[in-house]
Length: 198
Image (cartoon, rainbow, N blue to C red; front, side, top):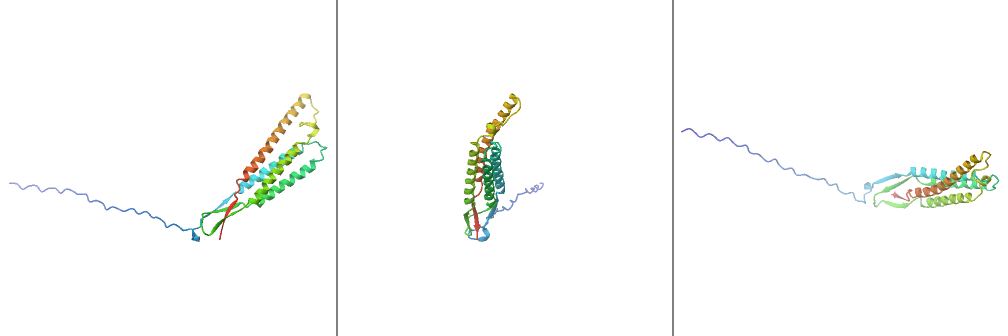
C-alpha cells in the first residue's frame, strides 16, 4: 500500500495591520491673544487717481464752454477764475485722503474708526459747485450769437460749421452730466472705515 501524498500547504493571507488616520485640528487662536491679530492693508490710490482725472475733465469741459462765449462777455475772466479755484479745491481734498486703510479680524486689541467722511462730504459739495458753474456758463450767449461763430466761407461751408458746432455743444453738455455722475460714483469707492490696533 503506497503512502498517501503529503498535502501541499495552502498559503494563507495575513491581513495587514489597519492604520488609524488622525486629523490634526489646530487649537483656535482666541481673539484675546495679541499675536492672533490678522490684518490686511487695502490700497485705493488708483481710485484717487481716477477722481483727480475726472475732476480735471470737469474743469476742461467748463473751460471749453468759456472759450466759446462772446468775446465781449465780462464774465469770462470771472468764470475762468472760479473754475480754476474749484479744481484746485477738489485736488486739495483728494490729496488729503489716506491712500490706505487697515482691515483686521475682530479682536480685543483693535477698534473700527471712521476716516475720510468729512473730506468726502466737502468734495461732493465741490462736485456740485463746479457742475452748477457749468450750468451758469451755458446760459451765456455764445460768440457771434451762434455755436459756429463768425463764418466768411460759402453758405454750405457756414451751415456745415454751425451744424458741427451744434453737435459739439450737445456732446459737451452730455459730457458734463456724465462726468458729474462718474465723479460721485467714484467717491463711493473710497473706504470710510479703518481699523486701529493698540
